Structure formats: structure tokens, C-alpha cells
Image 1 (cartoon, rainbow, N blue to C red):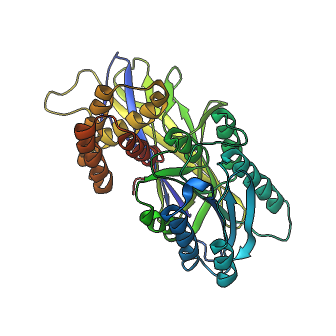
Image 2 (cartoon, rainbow, N blue to C red):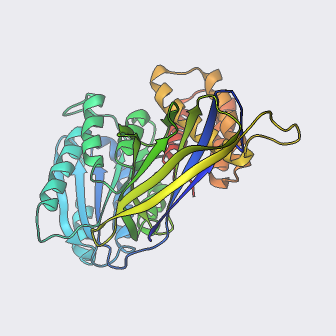
Length: 407
């Protein structure tokens, strides 16, 4: 079986006759791979005037260099966008290195930034590819780099996010990169979230290559497509999912996880609120999953029951939580709630408290990369206050955390 589903409860027990909230993390792991996986990489480069200099040079360089790490049969689409959207390369094999490199090098700057037009064109092209019977497609990946806000075409953020959501229904994973200080980080995070990806902020364009290449090297071999979780809870209980889309279904909820790769791990975080229970072992929920394997066959993972002891009174010598698990749960929940509150413009003091919580959480769960980024944000926040650079770094960190891909 190419996918493993491992649910864990943060509480060790509940107390009789009390309403209890039980946090949980469901870890989905890719434990197999397919050698014949064919990837389609769609790379979109902002070619507006503001990209002049190091930004466009490094974006072109990163695009050309990442070709070297693709499999020869991987397919490549490359777009440039400013006032208009141009197909630079369309459905070319990565082995056509020189032709692709020449086309990328020839991208010319001009005009403003039409993000909506770009996403709509990519969506239309994807549907065309999908409906072409002679084109195989296992994994569709999106990489986009921009330095600006929408200045041409549709500028309404809600409409841009809506077309991103439509595209995201077909995207395996995305990497959305903002370079510099003049772009809208909240919009880019929303695009990333809705296309199953991560938003990254770069103040230094020279780092574009290392970020681009990660999506090739880290997410190379697909294990399973369209992974979904199904949770049925105890009657009378409520369930909340924080970092993945969830929909009410017959007798429970359905959670859209997406595609998973070899050695990939996605953490889905939520909590169940239980009505008062009586002493004994209580059944909290049943978790099952479905996915499509690399042969396009639908598969199911058998139901996994979750139970917890209900005690008449808590033992004084024992904690009632798994502290490390609870910290990870709290970190992802906090990041998710903060992502929603960003549009309400939280104060610098509120942000400082949240960053302190994230520092503590990332240290406890031993996520060194996240801890390092959080410490950097806290230090910069203390020196500069809530500067645009601090906000962009924070939003990028939030995007990473709520993706559930913490490893």
C-alpha cells in the first residue's frame, strides 16, 4: 500500500461527565513510489517592468537550471506574464533542454502584472491537455514567481482566488514565490493555499534557484492521487479541521488531502469536542481513506477506530496530554487562525504574542528549520516593529505550517 494513515490523539484520557475537546493529528505518509510517473511542470515568470535586473535574470536562470534535475520525459509549460500572458514553451519534454533554455532566455519585459489572466490561461490549457487522449499526465505542478500586485486585467482579489481554486482542483502541488517588497503577500498565500502549495517570500532574488529546485528534487515520485480522509465521530460530538478543506457528508466529514509523494508527509490537524461521557473505554471516531493509485485504480484504506479511556477523576501524577503532539496541534491551529485574521490587520502586540507561541512550539517539536525562521522573525519584529518585510516573512512561515508538510 503506497499510503499510510496514522492518527494520533493529543489527550491521553478524558474525565467523566465533562465536555472535552480532544485535539488530533492525522499523518498521511507516502511510502511507495512509481518509476513511470510523468510530471508536468508549469512555470510562470512575471515579465513586468518591475522585474528588471536581478529578479528576471535569477528567475530565468532558476527555470533553466531546474530542467537539469527533471526526468527526460517530464513535460514543461512555461509562461511569461505582464499585460498579457504568453506561452513561452508548451508541452515540451525536459530533454529538449537547449530549445527550452533559448525560449526562456528570450523572455522580454513590458507592461504591468496580470495574475488573473495568467491563472485562467493555465487552467484552460490544463483542461485542454487533460481532454487530449494522447497525453499522459500523473502529476501537475505549478511554480510562479512575481514581484508585484495585480495592475492589469481582473484585479479583484476574490476573483483571483476563485480561479486559483478552480486550478487547484487539478494541481498536485504548487510553489508561489514573491520577490522583493512590493507584492501582496496575503494574495499570494491564498493562491498557494488554493493550489495545494506553499508561498515563499524572498528578499534576495539569488535564492530563487534553490527554492525552484526543491519542487523537482523533493516531490519527484508520486505515490497516490486525490487522497481523501473520512471521519465519523461519536454521536453528539462536533469536529473541526483547521488546515485542510473539509465537507460534511453522510455520517461524518470528508477531508481533501490531495496528492502525496514518495517520502512525503502531510499532517492534518483538528479536534473533536465530545459530549459528557461515562467511565470506560469510549469510541471517539473512525477514520478511513481513499486514493487513486498510479495505475488510476481507486483504492481504500480500511477504517481505523480511535478510542480513549474515560476516567472518573484525573490521576494527580499524570498529565492528560501528549505535550509534543499538543504543541504541534497548537502551532498549526494558531497559524491557520492567524492566516484568517490577517485581513483584519492584527496589532503588532498580537503578532508578537503569536510569534512567541510559534517559537515555543517549533522548539518543542524539534522542527529546526521552522524554529530558525520563527526566531529570525521575532528578532526582526523586536528591531523594526511590524514592518512590511516582517509581515512577508511571517505570512511565508504561516503558509509552510498550514500546508502540513513540516518535514
